[in-house]
Length: 345
Image (tube, rainbow, N blue to C red; front, side, top):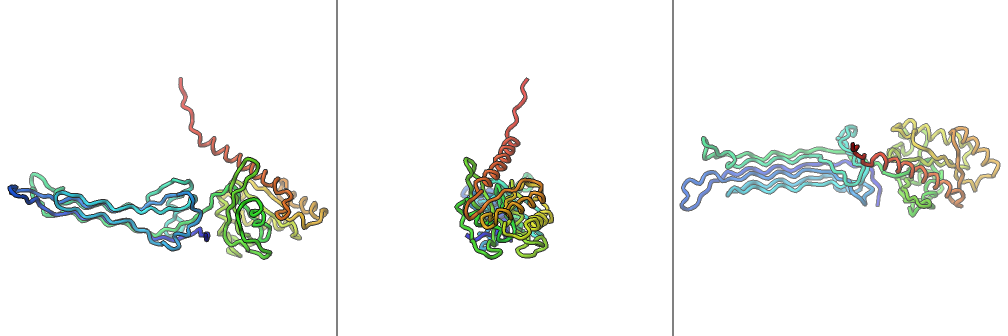
């Protein structure tokens, strides 16, 4: 399935049904009075986050979402049926914006969340509604109210436990393919990965989701290369796994380039826990590897792990470090969301 993280959708709620003008006409009932029913309410438009979706590709082909109109009222004081609602099913992590792309309407970050986007028009009153002691035979009814319409921008930010970042050809796709059942495209040229890839990873007893984000280059925040269009997916990650190609001449420059792009993008990415890994250790002489590891440690200010995504050396250590951060964050979330015990005297 093709990955699509942005979509433009036109939505429209249903019109309310018209009220009915009718009078009771039966044998032996000379003055039956008004008998027209009310119109039904138009259908509303909702958005709901559901399971088993991880792309907005459906809205590439369905760019118009319309709710049904309400039915008009009828004689014998019969009210019209309400129009069916339209429900837009989107992946968890979808943000809904106004047409300007900046005004946030809703952030559906949890499966089952549901938000009303447009309310259907009210049905019109039939003439039976207007009967009174001073107007016993009203010959008018209300028309139904028209529905609303709007154009929305949907943006999907993947919900993954950890985000995999680095310069092109740092070995991100190779690592993801080794530690999960994901099948990303792997080749020896830059920008092999053109869309984020997700994989479920197991480390000892901890399962977590790892997202491989397309490679960044210097100037990405200004639109160079693939730009920073995929960095938004890292916003919801609990940790960042930063891979550095060990065969690079200047690994410190490679590290600072990515950190600079994270800082330019903002959104708190620089504050997320980072695991820095020097990859492709099997292709670097021992002396050079030690020197590069020391240079990276000095640049980042914390420990640097070493691994090879091809041979598997050091991969288990990296996964355990990631799993530890993920487990800690999950425990903190459970504690924050746990119901508070009521104090009893």
